[in-house]
Length: 321
Image 1 (cartoon, rainbow, N blue to C red):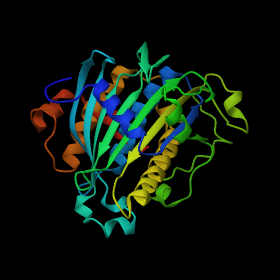
Image 2: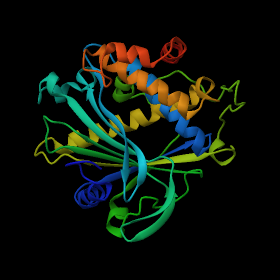
Image 3: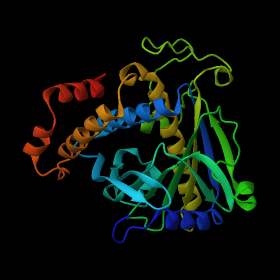
Image 4: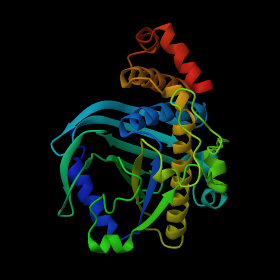
């Protein structure tokens, strides 16, 4: 890590301490694909959903996107983003803060999918490195949301993949998310809801689907994203309500994003990480141009010269389909 930024180990220690004070919830999302395919699917999904949800007024602004190397977690990609969520906030929250204050800053360390031995809470686990994400809101400066993700080649039956101690396990809630069941609450409306019917869906390129009852125990390949969400909102009077709202929002986002990962399989199946990395660089430029923010490359000409017309056409197809 560079400069004043904290290491993964320091952040993990802070999260470990905060777990003692707040409830934690683990979401288990089983996917009909391999861990390697999931990396491609997730990158494609993030690129497409960010482009679809960003305009001049709100959406995603890329502050930093660079490789990192850490003594504990190895090599990976660090990103810093701003999420402007004015239209997504429930009405009761807008009475506590002005709409222009509803901005979340996310820092993420993605070492996916290196495979090493790591130790958490004095318990050793051999596993796929977690995707580690921390979100904060400058207006609510005590609020902190942490998401730790572990990807395993199983069907969601592994226990304590995050290495929680007995006290944390007692407080932890576990929920299995079935991508065949879309959500229909307020947050699904705010996040967006696709109309895929996976009981009738079949991929033309991969030949996968439909997903019928009990598919998690029958499909091959299969993998699970174990997402541990820790939310700390130490505000008297509304902190608990804020925590529950954020949990519901994260759940809706997990459901929609993973439904899209599989629903868009014929768009990403067969693509390489190198192809997607080039599209991601171009997408970062376009996101910031949409919002009228500084782009990460030297200037607009640099952004345009970096990407051939074929790449631009592909990105447009990814976003519009």
